[in-house]
Length: 142
View 1 (cartoon, rainbow, N blue to C red):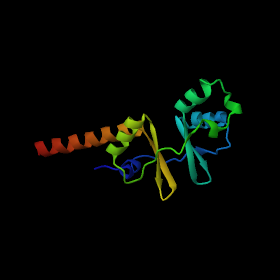
View 2: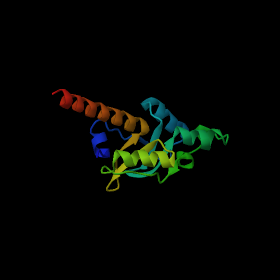
View 3: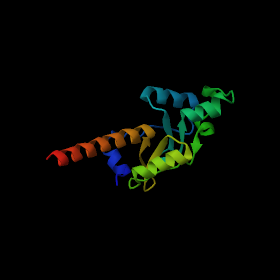
View 4: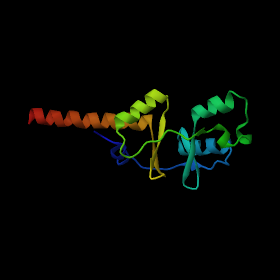
């Protein structure tokens, strides 16, 4: 069974974060600059939360708050659900489906190791299935 570690081995790991004192506008700028839809909220090396486009829509826009005047710690999802390197890809899909979330921070020994998105999972599953099909075709014809 494929694990989060297998997935991380196939992608460039970037830990992109903002501090809890950042404004929502600062977080949005980071997200735009990095072309991502979620950013971790960290103080030193400690994960405090995650801020996503969904958080922005639901906690800022719908409440008429100003992005530049609102601290990220007011809009983030605190204590996000995390996964470990040994969790299976199936478990990650299950968590995302049940909890209606699109991003999972990866934590090992209280240290953030990265984050995966639903897109990362789909891309990994497709590549894995293509490899399996190729191996089966070789076996059948060979």
